[in-house]
Length: 285
Image (tube, rainbow, N blue to C red; front, side, top):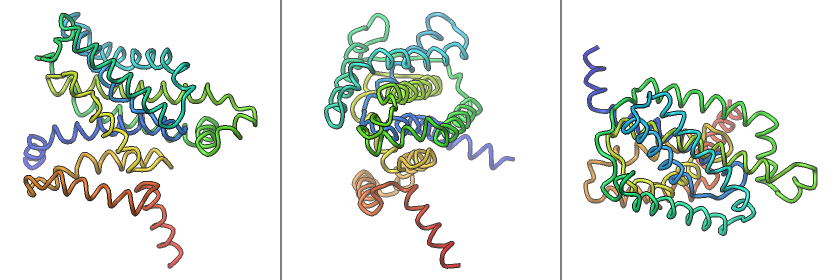
């Protein structure tokens, strides 16, 4: 098993990053599948990361308790933020959640005594192992797949297709949207708590606008037709820069061009493209 040890020593960070990115992509899948265009998931990830890191650094809390707090605190914030914010839609909702993200980032920057300000938090104990990330991804994916096939998932899909018609059928649209928003926040917070405990260091800049756009890109690229689309989007967004590493300074340019081409030729995401290819293969047998 020498090859496995060698592989893990080189790519362990990449594998763990892919796992947390899958959690983040599943978090944005919930809101996108319910027709909500939000970019607050990076802020929820930051809340989860700081809550968990502060508990283990300052209070000596067990890792399990830190993960639980990192999951529940962003969910509680989403429950409070959701009712006034989800009255908006489209680009206005995106702007409101973008402003919330900036409020969280600036709050962390100015709370130097607690969060370290711009210098961030150093020396976070490395408690996250591959089993934690794999377990979290499997549980989140299983619950997402079950939810997608349940009454909850069908309500999300109906709201995404036509919010007004769904409401006229007696569905409590705001309650379902708040549920999607809260579930997404909890998953993003869990990803932040796990990520903070294998990178040793966190800072507010990691949870800003660019991170929010990256999370949104994972969901859009993979597609919102199934939780598998979120998984595919996260894997592509994580691996593509590494596969292009040999291109040096041209890597960001080629990376961006590939993503644009994928979106142009598969506007519903890679999951829809793969399903179409599978149906064609079955029909030609």
